[in-house]
Image (cartoon, rainbow, N blue to C red; front, side):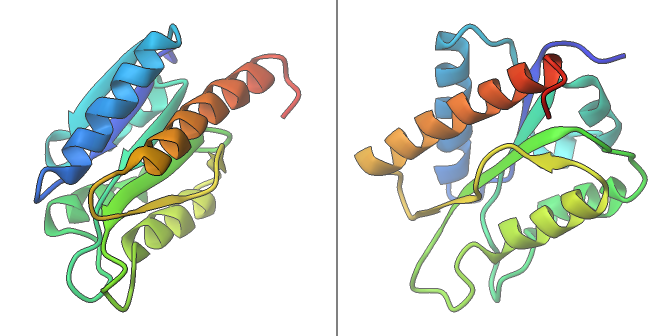
Length: 156
């Protein structure tokens, strides 16, 4: 059964992505949305099916890998039919790394393969979110809401 909640699932080692997930939750709540936020290692992928849409916030580990605490989530995604489910991806990484934000690209490939629809461009943030990044996160929130409304009207 689908509800009207937007799920936010995050992986955070330094605390940056946890703060980003908190910011997203605050912004979406201000915009009148019902939000459900979870740390990725404690999240059951089946719950994605109950959300109207979801946002994954993740860092990229070491040489461009999915974080260890997100590996079970990533593997479990393969068991869920996400056809038509809107999502967005964001997360903090470092432009000093050769594979800046590549875990988000891997997640995107997996979600597209499972039939989900990306509601917004992938938003990669360098280190701590600055004012410009916060404005981009605000836009991401609005794009997810707009996509949900279009989907509800059967326009996408």
